[in-house]
Image (tube, rainbow, N blue to C red):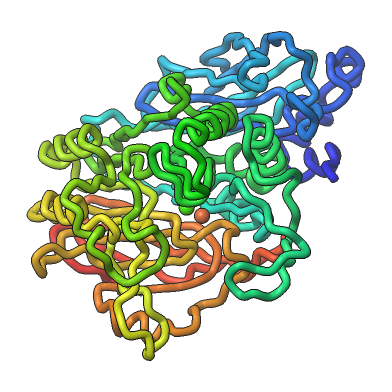
Length: 519
Ligand code: FE
Ligand code: CA
């Protein structure tokens, strides 16, 4: 179970110092019987003059409402220009409201561009540990280099978050893009059969509760995940830019369509609860507060003249998967001219961004694979098999998107969802129009191995794929005006909390030269 002493001693020197120097009288005056910042702190949504800082007051994180009464609570926050908090550059008070699970989302502004800051919270006589956050360079700035992380897919039951411990130690990251599947709504049954192998299902660690259906269920799922110290370390170290994918709500949902078959009006109620809990636990802006039960956001992030990163939403505006979804041979629905992945408004917005083409690199940070790959792994399978929950199931909007990339010579697509690493080429009319880097998972899928069985068949059938790997980990991207390098960082296991990190490969795209070099 959760131990405050263990937690404090493992979060780093800063937190330990805070604990040691905090006079015991403060403990005696605390409103709380237990540490109220049990779910950590986070920063997110960086801009050139600020970012969001987040926490949630939850002294009993696994109890209903985090162990809080139904009253608003003032929470004080401070942002400093140094890690000892000698120079406080912004401070204020936010109200943690019971309607939002006593979470606070502070939009800090008026800061200097392109530098680190440190932040912390106090509430009821207790102080959080400190976090580091970074502002972005101004849009017009000449920037020599961008380094950032890419992570997601963190099924709690499939493994420990040791990859996050390594990500937390990465130096010089401007931000971390999280592609979603922060929680998984379902649970494995320890006495049931594994759906992929048919063997007995033995979770590495178990989630509390059943399949998430209402806001309380989803809150509990986030609380349990956020008690993980390695995840807290990653949030304390880096500023996150957060998407959601399917499992924040339900496996392979799109729009108001429940793969489980509930009526759309009924599914919309479940989805509203899921989105509320998502908002309550993510370091996002007030503009991402659910309206009418949905978080509709997509947005762009500018990193000087070097990169524009369009953060897409590939779930909410997408039409239903063709052919009943799944991994299947092609069916007529794949060529449906009315099908949409982004929806008309988001697609028009993205098109405008790409036509303006203001930065050296255009990056689409999104959720589902854009390459249309043949998923067969056995030579005897007769027909091409597609992942119908990816862009491959939506050939008309996919071709439209690829056509828009043509001639830009600077498009990099970042993707999650697959629980495997891929580096591959995006092509249109036999021309290379971009590179796609698919990030594996933090834990989803378990330990894995370097290559899944049948990888030789897979690589033969998909010559556009230049690299595959089936271990857990995260990406780091190092971007200069001359080249985009994506590092595939993998851990040897997630079935134990101790693991080893290694750099499995680096995939490099040279500016203006189509193609990927693997090293
Ligand atoms: Fe996932
Ligand atoms: Ca997913």
